[in-house]
Image 1 (cartoon, helix red, strand yellow):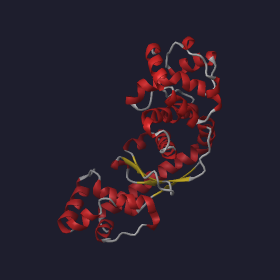
Image 2 (tube, rainbow, N blue to C red):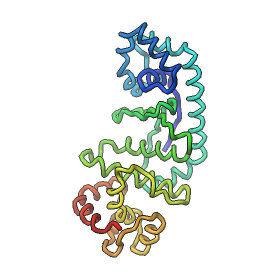
Image 3 (cartoon, one colour):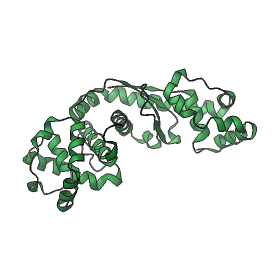
Image 4 (cartoon, rainbow, N blue to C red):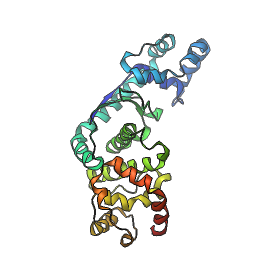
Length: 278
């Protein structure tokens, strides 16, 4: 898997104009533009999709508002802060990408051949966006909590990449798909890299489903009953392991196969899981 961390002035400017303002100077800029160019401002409201699709090749039909933003002092300041954040993410990726590549392949069991382009915007914009049908694999990325932990930021990025990669798979079971990706990346990949369990992290609204899938997830990782106990102790995810017959075939499928298994057996898994969660 290859990731490139880039910036794009048009994408940054668009997000500054249409996302909530994070300082007074930015808000003042937006109000001035609205007062002077209201029609031009309104026409831009969906151009983020075009920028994401075409990135460096994007040329606006009317660049009046963009030029106004580019010439402002606040844009120059925010652009420098955005570039600093891009370098922070890139440095963390350079430091960890070899072990991430190795462990990710072991966990998901299918190759990711394309290069993903992370178009970094200011983290205080606190937004992520992508167009799943875009062959350029561009993702607009700016999350406030990325600044606290570079490795955790990478886990969130890789979670998003995997979601992008399998976005058209099992569309009727989005909650299961999200939970499995959470188990794979937020929990297992992060655990393997840090050598400390991260199974207490992830989306809170998926915690019950995660506990129900967890015994089968361990089978997917290749655990027998004895190893399931070790995992369970490591991750502090207790369940009555003796009531689960080990599905050895799960250790031979890739992440798509595991998602299929969970979707095809969800009624049994959820009913049985509810009885066994401790």
